[in-house]
Length: 353
Image (cartoon, rainbow, N blue to C red; front, side, top):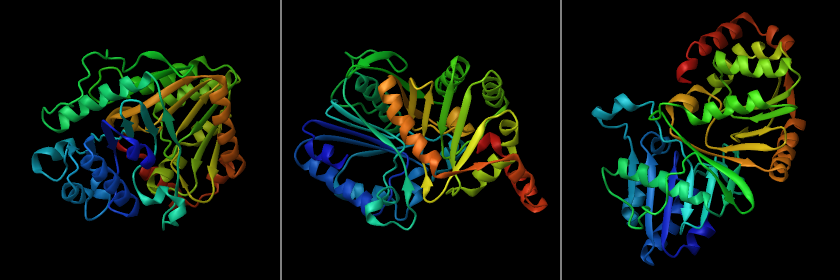
């Protein structure tokens, strides 16, 4: 992403949930400052809650560097606290409307293992070129106009049609762009997941750092398992939000008893988000499998219809699975009463976790 920013000649659109004031954040600010100085139009969109993950906040450094930015639903002013749960969780970088990056990566040094961070984070991110970028630009322009109270991008997008859920050709791949959020009457991401689960014929591979499902999703997965679909769910044993794992343990038996396999990866916290259906359809992006991503967050994902690409990601998932431990009903039943009560209490907050 830093190389792409250095190569920009016209425009840089950057949207991220977490943009930390650390060694990696400083690198991005320096490269963005350099882009501004050579005449590139730069737009940085930050989430009002995400910028609070580090102190001091990155906004001061951006302002000092002369990099234009806007904050999506600030949480530190009284009249915005009612929107505290509505977060812009999208991770997007578009350079010159020709090269885009999308996935789960936040801008923080934990993702850069070469820096030997104190809290290493594994993740997966994607580089794209082609017509699908038009969708990303439209979505960013809408977010920017909202966050900056009416300001528009200098490089106008009138000629691009709104294809936020369309299927278009991208470098010989069929790609569907999925912008989602609480402003939509029909949730696109969760609806597509349910469709793909219902259509699955042989196997489902799910990787998510947070895996908390409502009754609809539990029923969909167990129904698929009952008709013979092999389902593997890979989650991290070490979670940056431990109560998410507690709540997952409290409801995991509902899947395990129907044959859904749950694996917990060992080692570093794994923030990857991957969904592969029948080694053909792949869905990746910013969304987790939890209530926040399904109902509360503004998210950005893509679906790729390609056996070749699905095979690559299945190989990644299989590698994670090989280094994971199987979660069993027997192990859950052996938890102490104190742990069971802790996990059950965490599960009570499932609608907002």
